[in-house]
Amino acid sequence: MLLGLLVLALVGVGGYGAYDFYEQTQKWERETTDDLNGVGSDLSVAVASMRSVGWEITAKDVGAWLEQPGTYGDGLGLRTLAADETGKSFTVAGYRTWQDTYAKRDHTTVVCAAITLGEGIKSPVNETITTCPDDAPKTAPDAPATGTEAGQTDGGQTDAGGVAGKLAELTLEASEQRTSTGAAGDLLEVAAPTKPVGDMRADSTALRCAPGTNDIGEAEGYDKGELIPVRLCAVEGLPNTGTESTKGNPSYIDGADGLTVVNARISGAAAALVKKASKQGIDLVAGSSFRTMAKQKALCAEDLSGGCQAGDYTLTAQPGHSSHQLGIAIDFEEPSVTGGKTCATRASQPNSPVWTFLNKVALGFGLKQYAPEAWHWDAYGGKDRCAPL
Image 1 (cartoon, helix red, strand yellow):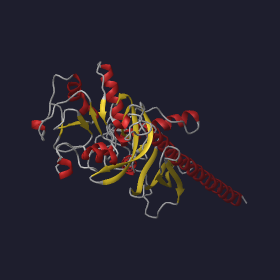
Image 2: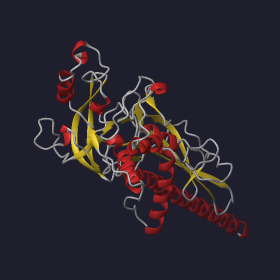
Image 3: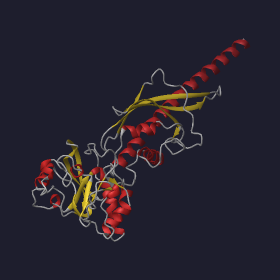
């Protein structure tokens, strides 16, 4: 009888242990799921915060952040299982390692999610918990060698000065905010870009105008004769005497209201340049900025040399090929010197305070001088775009 009681006791203890292990497994699956949902929430806050002040976030940026090894937040192991940058989608796995009460053994719970990069700031990231693929690793990724958290700069990790580095910084800040408040937080404070954003020759309609500029809507931009939709921004503190900014003129752009009009991709750079000039007592005034196709054709027709009409675009750019038509160029009023076609023979005007200022600081905002014209500065590359003398 004693033997029977002992057997029953052992069975009871074993059954209780199994039941407790099941409870622990369920608990850690819930916690890991919550943690992984938190990653999506934090990434949403980070992306929305950056976009709100004019940054462009691409799937490549999100992929670069997700690829960082090691832990996220308070210890969640994060691993990218699949990435489709064209489709802006990723499959990620979150890992939590824990020890069961009775066997004192470590176990790892794995939960997977599908993350898709959306548009705008209302639904910047979509996340859905999903079944892990059969080939998903069952063990957590290795922690960073120095103990830094995923996405922070550490040797080969994401450059803290780049977009992915900013995402890393902001997602961790969003995680801390969510942990302290118990809910997903509002947009985080983030500095606007002070250099041109992304591919200058790409559609910019999804971007927001940077602080210090006013959104005046979408327009038809052109590069190499091809139509490229652009978002236009009027730069506060940078008056423009050109026809595109003068009310009543046939070339006037609605909303310009006497201000310089630029592509959203350089709106942050232009605003920062104006702020820098003001601090140094330099009054910047533009004579031309964004131009419509009609305006560029009119300039070509008005070329007194006859070059533009004859196919010689030395003095006036071919319609559809001017950087002004993409909204990434500004002609400043004061400099007036012309020069050669190369940076070695560029136009220079040291006696002009505006040219001297631009020559010293414009490159820091991603703008270079077009070699033949002392007044023309833009975000194009090429051998005829010049760094400071």
